[in-house]
Amino acid sequence: MSVIPLGGGPEFDRIRAIARRLGAHAAELGDDCALVELGATTLALSTDVSVEGVHFRREWITPQEIGWRATAAALSDLAATGASAIGVLVALTVPPAEQPPMFAALMEGVGAAVSASGGKVLGGDLSRGEAISLAITVVGTVERPVHRRGAQVGDRLWVTGQLGGARAALEAWNAGRTPLAGARERFAKPIPRIDAGRWLAEHGATAMLDVSDGLAGDVGHLAAASKVALVVDIGSLPLHPDITREAFAARETPGVFAARGGEDYELLVTMPREFSGSEAISMTCIGDVHPGTGVAFFEDGFELNISGYDHFA
Amino acid sequence: MSVIPLGGGPEFDRIRAIARRLGAHAAELGDDCALVELGATTLALSTDVSVEGVHFRREWITPQEIGWRATAAALSDLAATGASAIGVLVALTVPPAEQPPMFAALMEGVGAAVSASGGKVLGGDLSRGEAISLAITVVGTVERPVHRRGAQVGDRLWVTGQLGGARAALEAWNAGRTPLAGARERFAKPIPRIDAGRWLAEHGATAMLDVSDGLAGDVGHLAAASKVALVVDIGSLPLHPDITREAFAARETPGVFAARGGEDYELLVTMPREFSGSEAISMTCIGDVHPGTGVAFFEDGFELNISGYDHFA
Image 1 (cartoon, each protein chain N blue to C red):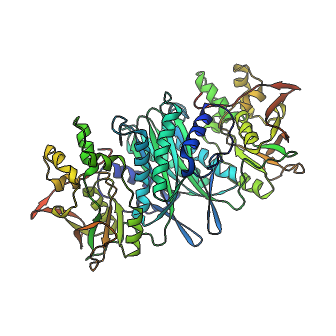
Image 2 (image 1 turned 90 degrees about the horizontal axis):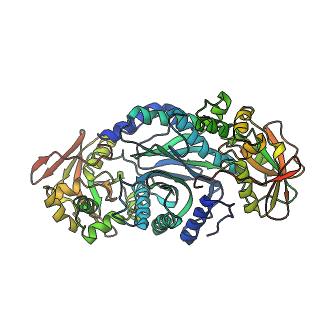
Image 3 (image 1 turned 45 degrees about the vertical axis):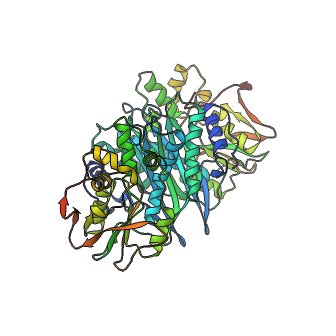
């Protein structure tokens, strides 16, 4: 098997260990979606697990939002490949004391998120478990799949939407504060960029992934997979308006705060140099592709040393 | 949406509650696999979650066997639809203290099981969690899908392989005894009946599902989905040779013990009356399809009242 090179961190050490052990049993791992050619169609598949106490807490968001968020996170992998959604399968564990209304509320959120992306709930499984967890598998089709490995020297690096909102909500909750409404919305109901992903795939995207570990970590994955160096201008990042207070509390500049924020589910994409943006999609140019390896972050002319979020750190 | 009628029990009450809440967001639920038509191909998809402390314990089986067993359980849903395997996606949670070797060993078992069924590991996700859990999504293709709803009055009911082995291992462990080797093997390394499922689909199977909740429960699902009555001769069940001691300890006849045993992953199938068995597949005729509803179990001329296993009971 081949493993697409990944950036650093303990979670990625684990993925590498698994890939080595699987050997010939595994298809190529490391892209946002697995691709399977089936007649004239290419299937895009991905699975994503959300665990209570790791990815969310019940005190923060409603069961419907837990279901929406887990599903949006998984659908975001389809977006990052340029795929359309057929639907999702859901494996749910909940503590035995929970009653049917909790299951149904979680699944209502799942159903709403997949419906908003043009898909359906295709199937599921239930079990009791110590905590709520949702393993969401997304199924889609893609005409022109975009990988992480295709960035070319000379391309420019773009990002959709705004960054840092989800982290601002998280930091507020962790400090015992009430998040601002806009930040809370970004955490509780992220929008998978399915339409933007398809548009970018059709308009020449050379490499793409979704901002799930945080921009600072995700640019590292893109650079490693494409075997290029990336230079990122932190000063140009599109910032969510609700991050100011939390960035101040974290003693970070708003740009660094946003770059280290996970789970924005925006798309990070390299486009040919001549691409100058789109009226169809809110997107911002944040850097360039250079020969070499690794990522350099600059802000106000100074190079910064910043890293993303790792569930195992 | 439509929900395929299910048998009784709290787990099925939960599935019904979810189905009601999902409404138009969901495809038809309740069969072993979801079916998606894609050009000339029909995709078969299913997801299955295995949780430490619910489906297995680490004291009982090795990490490789945990991985194999979870994957075989999921692949068994493809078998029950008459599908071939393309591969699996795996969402894994493990306690934070576990090291990469544990992940890799679990995934080695996953890889071996999917490889033995002709598929590959297509992708996965990792998170920390309170306990080990594996949510396995299987992806396959099927030419002539078999549903639960197709049993016809006059058909005969058949089952592949032998029943009760997995339960014999489970009862031994729960009582602090060492299971017999054959029973342990049935629990730790069940074989998904992919080839048998395809053969049966090609040879006229009218309805099929896998024996996961226990034959006594699963015949109820088949009767409810097909809107027929089933009469099962417990005396004719093909018994695993290692169940005698555990059936005696449970104060059940071997036939009732086997009928109430879950997780054998054999196929329960209705075939037209003229079908007289196969040299290609080990299978046994255990009953008939009648007009009406529900299931009647007989042993030595007496009607019995028995039920299957429910994770939420």
